Image 1: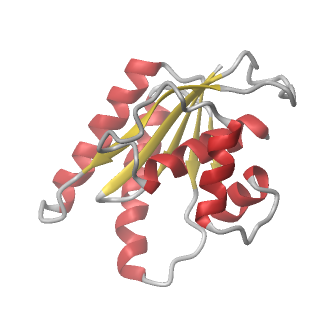
Image 2: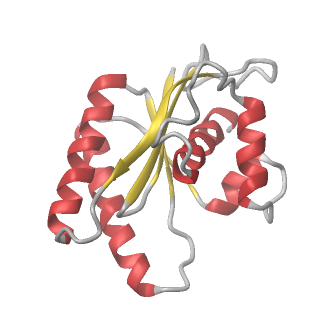
Length: 169
């Protein structure tokens, strides 16, 4: 099974793709380590009009789906935002991401940041760095150049954690 994890945003959208021998309906084997296929970020320019940014996010999500043919997509769900100005554009970005997924009839799992922390680290108030460190331990990233521009961003790491969350559920 191939799982695409997505950390939505408007300027930076993290993505992570993992592969496992598990099928959608099987419980995961505690000893199995999923293989990292790819990860990185979709970026849009902050000065671009919102419609153009959403178009880029949509097209790049479609490109990832066509390239990797995921069996399941795991998307971070908006749970709480302190700033409504941030929540609305991210909600719009999530909308075009979910549309792209729905058009390809791929099952979707949605997880809040709390659920990702609980599943990956075992503690709902874990710090972002703890989630990233545990994700690194649970996934073998040795075959990847982590200095590559879009691979060292927190958003790409978060997306791998979101994909891992779907694997562990």
